Image 1 (cartoon, helix red, strand yellow):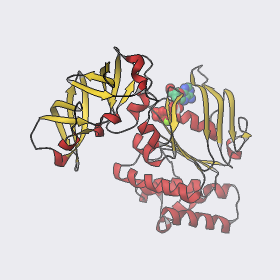
Image 2 (spheres, helix red, strand yellow):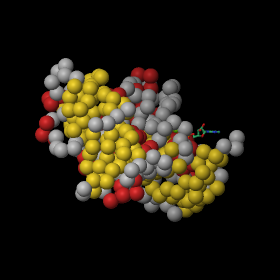
Image 3 (tube, rainbow, N blue to C red):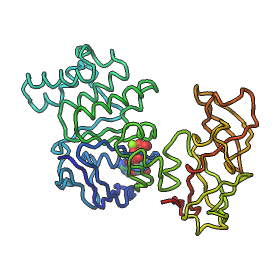
Image 4 (tube, rainbow, N blue to C red):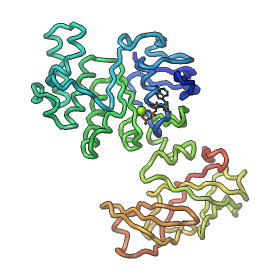
Length: 363
Ligand SMILES: Nc1ncnc2c1ncn2[C@@H]1O[C@H](COP(=O)(O)OP(=O)(O)OP(=O)(O)O)[C@@H](O)[C@H]1O
Ligand SMILES: [Mg+2]
């Protein structure tokens, strides 16, 4: 069992700055959890506390039910893969992968079996005799993974392992790592600041800001029901649009007014906001150019400042009700060169946030 539990964990660095004020987090055995958040929010610190590379100031860290605070890294049954994987340049791929086991004086035939097993899974069999400089970035990254795999850890920690790779390789390695997790059936904790990586790889995603967990849930729930403005803006690409809107009582339910638009919304949670201003959140993919989406009260007449054709989709940039907005429209629904168009909003997909607390109004 390698579940990981943080109980009221505080991390204060030697300079007196507290970067993690009170962390409570439960990662299940065999789960793939992604820690995501902006630079400096404490992702690496959290990972390094699991590995034992950073001390814990207060609280408890449990792995497999055992308190780990004072257990040295080498006794934690954990392997970590870093961003700058730092292979030994003078050693072959084989020796790089075998290194940790050689140091532990594991019998040679056992090392051989493990290295070949890892090489097979990672597609490195034909490169075992090469030195790192004769490998591509993606191959080097796989050697770094292989070094961790041969140790058979019960927890894999990965700190932005793909950030050195170009876009195509990243996509490739992303699915390789996800597959690896399925094959190894061990707990993975993966740090990234890339929301696409988080969304595509994690069983659950922990969104952090200033050392505080904002939301810890499945990718689908983070996308459908972000608890606050921060998570809403962080998850999804292009980013969710935010625009001020006024809540008004309507005959049946409520209306949200912004610009020339007045969209119906019948959620009871809007009651306390009647006559007040809220932040309306609209995902770019919920604005459509097709006429078939139009319905009374869901039309936005906009002037497109810029369009970016991405293939089947086109990103449309425009200003509306004082906000900069983006729509992700089907390219085939657009007439080339046309800049004054009508967009239809899927009104049942909107998000509403309290202006003061920035929390989602819908539960
Ligand atoms: N050894 C240290 N001493 C003092 N402060 C530190 C130390 N290491 C990190 N910090 C600070 O702790 C905060 C969290 O750092 P951390 O490396 O965990 O962030 P991160 O989320 O991994 O960011 P990034 O995405 O840039 O890697 C930052 O403000 C950082 O400056
Ligand atoms: Mg980091």
